[in-house]
Image (cartoon, rainbow, N blue to C red):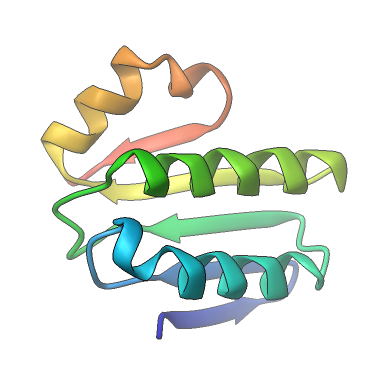
Length: 102
């Protein structure tokens, strides 16, 4: 189960584990529940996440599409270098904010 932090109209979710197919259903459910709150900003904190597979990327893209329809923004922070490079190669940085680990 992910750690969830609520700050006014901003929600932060920290999965704390790799976003891979084996945890996809639970993470997707958590995001769906959070999106029901219609946040202005949803932040996915990937601190401690080393691997994001194609299923994980699909969940993130779906979350972006959902929050975008609600007029909100998605931000991905604390992204490991290899994952950040993959996201940029896929041009996901054109759709939502990406911040690598500092």
